[in-house]
Image 1 (cartoon, rainbow, N blue to C red):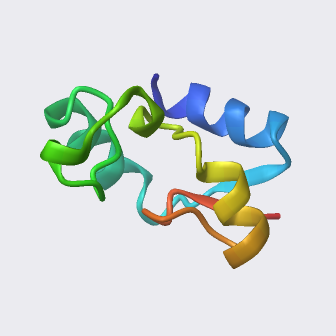
Image 2: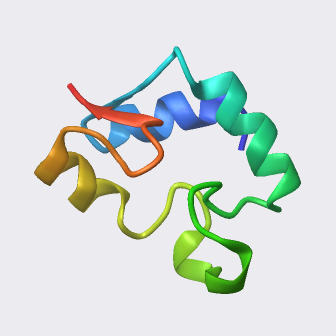
Length: 73
């Protein structure tokens, strides 16, 4: 996904994108083939494709996802 798609996904899920880190995260996602850059490669599953399965729960619980890309509105 590109920046605009991440922003739209966040909006659709009642979150906002952290504009301070999005460019850095997007560059890392290119290297990790879309897997969350905060998860070690030996632990990657389809659940870790960004936005990951845990994103919405993390934002609701902590105000942000694990890698700080998505934030609570």
